[in-house]
Amino acid sequence: MADSKEDIRIGTIVNGGEGKDPANYIGQILKHGFESFQLSFWQKTGKIDWQEQAEKITASLGDSGAVINALGCFGNPLDTEEIDKETLKAWEDCIDNAHLFGASIVAGFTGRLRGKSIPDSIPRFKEVFGELTKRAEDKGVKIAFENCDMGGDWESGDWNIAHNPTAWNMMFDAVQSDSIGLEWEPCHQMVSLIDPIEQLRDWVSKIFHVHGKDATIKWDVVRKFGVHGPNVFAQHRTPGFGDTNWTDVISILREGGFKGSIDIEGWHDPVYKDDLEMTGQVHALNYLKQCRGGYYIPNPT
Image (cartoon, rainbow, N blue to C red; front, side):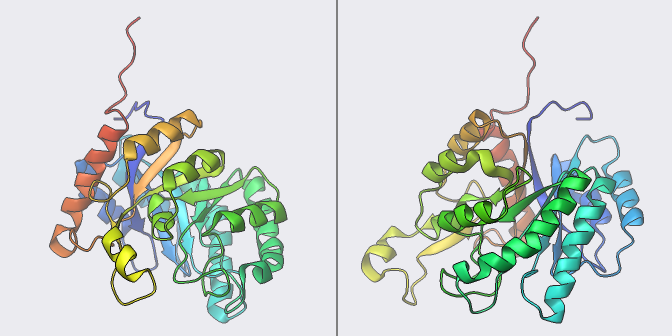
């Protein structure tokens, strides 16, 4: 795969946090055919030796042709607690060091002012990501915002404002740059009962990175009990086990000019978990490759 011409790669997410060994993890799963990886950090990057980690991961990738397409920073960089300050520093670290891995995208939560509404958080978003966007532009990096609500809503939350298209309009109006966009997946929109296919057509030009995660909506539960009771009305699923037509997703991405990675976000499926985690991820990998049309085949000359 060293000379791969795939314009949409299929990969997975790897934990790059302090004390983890992402190079070893990648080395173990690379044989299954993953074409890209997102290196992910939760709230902080800590005392990582970026150069050393990049060298180890590069060695692990070898001549496979697989790439590190994105770094991920997931925390709250907008509020002012000590951990939030560490998250803001982690965003800066990821932007500054993405080039060591050949990555062109840094993705994550926007953060929000805890307990405040999305409109209340926009001025702080403009302040923080106005500066981070300039930093990213200087480094040739794009910023992509994950679309998970993390249990928040319009009026309140702890982690992220970028989970609703109305919020996206407000964000992209506050910080106007071609270097900021979305890290999109259908799952988080489906659990809000949003049609992901219609949304994707509207927003495809702003999508820089895609997470491979799906959902199953239990419409019988929704019709009987709604979405605020104790009954589970939606399940996060690994692609290939949920409700989304990923052939349509990838076709719309292609039509919109998307060239990048769909990286599987595992560790959420209620069935393919524990000892079946990698079974589910590799099924998703092969399923998404088929939805992509299989492997790239050059036309005859």
